[in-house]
Image 1 (cartoon, chains in turn green, red, yellow, brown):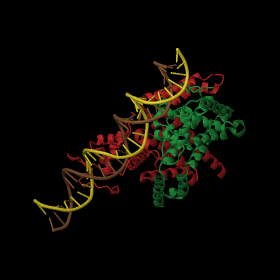
Image 2 (cartoon, chains in turn yellow, green, orange, blue):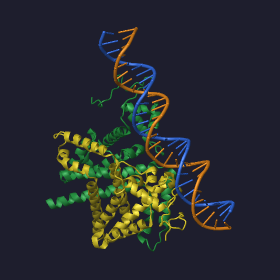
Image 3 (cartoon, protein in one colour):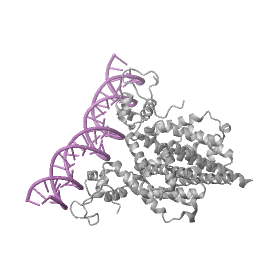
Image 4 (tube, chains in turn orange, blue, purple, yellow):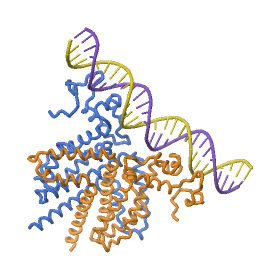
Length: 245
Length: 245
DNA sequence: GCGCTCCTGTCAATGGCATTGACATCGACA
DNA sequence: TGTCGATGTCAATGCCATTGACAGGAGCGC
């Protein structure tokens, strides 16, 4: 059901891998690409790596995807679907809108960070898969129920999404750098901040430990931003409630 | 004063361009790179393009920067300094903490978006230039004055920065795509959302016009997120005020 | 002024990457 | 059985960062 658009797959099905010339399929390629994309090390998602993973010539992929962009688009869709699936069991009515938004955002982030090499490429494209639109509908409904206007709720949805994708993309990009570079970067920061004179930078100096922590832990920063953002949403809801009374 | 580390510049100065073999300098290269990086079209920041801009062999750049990464780092520093400069004239005490934070974030975003090709590369690196640390000190002070704890203020600073850089990077990346791809992307979204059945997606359908608007206007989304985030900060300040009373 | 030696620009690789076009193979179907 | 379309393979092509060998010119001691 719901055969993905233009693909063929000669009716023999993707199940039983015939021995010679093991025939590929969009499915198999996507799977392999996701697997390659999850390697943490500096390795990026490249056609040759993908070919190796598939045990086929790198260029074979072109028989199934017009170019890398189209592949990335498919991967993005896949990841979005995956992230939606992860929150499907959660009932907004039970956990409350705030916790639900938090979970939605976190699951997107988690899915992306599990495949940094894909995440870096995926960030720029807008997608609209069935699962996603359903999720949007639900998200808007939840926020509307919480007291926001429908359109305002939609705005919050969009903001939350971009916020999450943006920050996550940055984290993924950093995670993809070779370990030494990462350390070098962090060290440079540490040294600079350690040297700031107390007299000129009293506030900064007082915050250095915490800032250093945040520097090492992008997730913490994300949580922080997310919480603050949600506080903002809460404030808007309160404001509307007060005005409407 | 403050001669930039290891550079040489044979005392003749960077001012008068000698005719033959016009000698390069970090300065000149940075300037050229920023100029190249501001081209909107699909063109990226590449050594050959940079070479052309400089009227020199592309590899000449290696005499002044170890590799592209080091160059990008220098460019990032430059842009950060630039963005700090842009808000220097604004007095936080006069415009209030909220407006000031907004301006800080907006100026970073503006500077980056003026050079999308640089922005895409710059996003992952952490910098700590003199101008920036000064700005951080000021930002924390302002938030502290507004009622936040010093460390909490530092957290907000960091969150605001990552939020801004992340979202801006995404926008820059999209802006760099060839125009047809951008349009194609937007169109695909529009079509999908136009086809959603009213019955299943009542809330989404009601929001489609606004969502379409936001889809075309990343700046609007950013403003929206920024405002909500600042609302969150406000809420925190209020909360502390109430508790401390 | 002479030779020495850096400093810095140039040129010609090298190796990774996406993408393309020609060819080969296989399976289905007439 | 012969043809055709779908799909894998191979050998280019072109862009890119980076490197190593070479070259001209500036300062410097003599």
